[in-house]
Image (tube, rainbow, N blue to C red; front, side):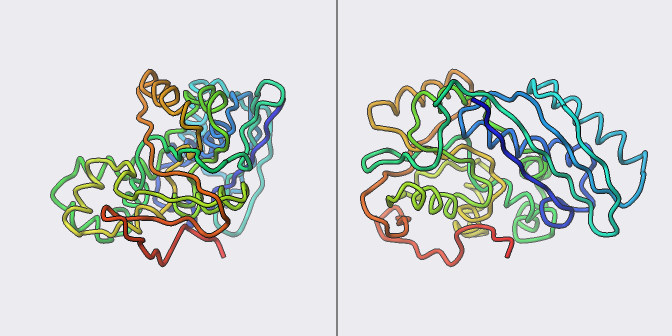
Length: 290
C-alpha cells in the first residue's frame, strides 16, 4: 500500500526568517517523514513546491544541498515539483509517499481501553528552542549556557523523524500519530478519532536534561512543554502485552520510548495528572493556526 502525506511550512509560522536555509530544507522534508514514521511507512519519495519572493542563489544553494543530503540519508528521493514566485512570506510544501505492507498502515482509530500510551524521544525541546530564538524565558534562563541553548534551538530547527521505528510501530501499535502541534492536543485528537479517553501521568512525560532543569527551577511551566508542539515524536497506543517489545525496538535503535499513560473507556477529554494524582488544568493544549 502507498501512504501519502503532505505538510507545508511557512516563513514566520513554522520557521523564522532568520533561520539558515539548510535547516529550513531539512525541516520541510523531515516533518513529512515524521508523518510516515507514525503510519509505520517506509519513505519512497516526495514532490516539492517552493513559493519564493525571488531568485536568491545565496539562499537556494544551501537549501538545495541540505535537501539533497536528507533525501539520500532517508532514502526518499525528490520526484518532481514546482517553483513559483510570491509577494508574501516564503512557503515550502512537500507531499511525501511511503510504503507499508497491504492493510498494515497504522491510523488514529484503533486505540482501545487498556492500551498503554507511549511516546518516543523527549517532549518540549522544540518549544523551548523557539523561546530561546525569540528571547523568551528560556533565553534568559540559559543566557550563560550556550550548549543548552544550541541543543534546544537544534530541536526546533531540525526535527528528528523516527523512521527507524516505523516497522515496530506497525507491528505493535493500535493507533499512532506524530506530535506536531503539541503532545496534549495531539493526544486529544487521537482519542477523539478512536472514540476513547485517556489518563496521562505528566511526571512520566520524557524530558531532556535542559527542559527538566528549567521545569525544576520554575523557569518555564509544564504547559509550555505539553502544548508547545514541533516535537515530531511518535505518539502511539500499544496493548500491554506488546509494550516491552516496542520499548526494546527503540532501545535497539538508540531511541528511548516511554510509557506516559493509559487509554480508558469514554469520550471525555484526556486527563493529565500530576505526581500526586491531581488533574492539571491546561489552558492551552496545542498550537492552533486559527
